[in-house]
Image (cartoon, rainbow, N blue to C red; front, side, top):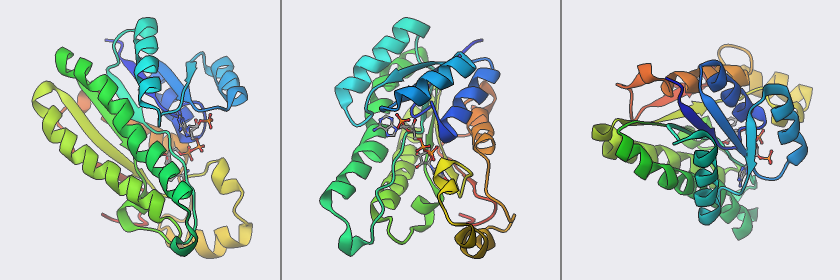
Length: 241
Ligand code: NDP
């Protein structure tokens, strides 16, 4: 059966790899993004996956966006909450704006999206929700009190919803990546990468977006129906939670 999958932030980085992996698994995929039209258009041209633009922090925009995707592709069976941002600063310098921007996208965005697919999944007695947390939500990170709070919050949210969705055929899981080789990482100086970051990772390398995508695709598959409320760490052994 061809499932309909919605991937937030699915037009670039880890999200693009997830969208592509779900398509390869036979899903009809809708990828959302926030504002980078050029990247989204290039992604659609390359993969044939349609992209939709809205801000996940806006509840009504999520409601309208989900309705549009369901009109185009049919009911959403799989939601991947991947859209996320960082607004790093040591806490004594962190502004309320930096705090709220992170909460609005990474935590409220997950509520907004999940809330707008949950009723349909309950009615149809099937759903797969996978949210991308982070190693830093599991262990904390200097200058990321805001980000870590949202990513830890996503884990608590997931464990709670897993209990609520279980009898309705909905599984709810987390994938928590460590350092992944995305555009973000390419800005890190080579010396910092070799002397600070890589020595922390037992496998001795960064992860690839495709490695996260394959974990998500498995949790999103019909085969993963007995796995719910789990946090799948994909971090090269850096943190074993
Ligand atoms: P990128 O910055 O490469 O891509 C983020 C995506 O999310 C983009 O498509 C972006 O849209 C979209 N997005 C951002 N804010 C919003 C918003 N408010 N509304 C809708 N869409 C939004 O991120 P990564 O691929 O690096 O990260 C993906 C996820 O993985 C995030 O949740 C991140 O926290 C998590 N993660 C990443 C790690 C890493 O090493 N990269 C490690 C651990 C976790 P647009 O293109 O329009 O800006």
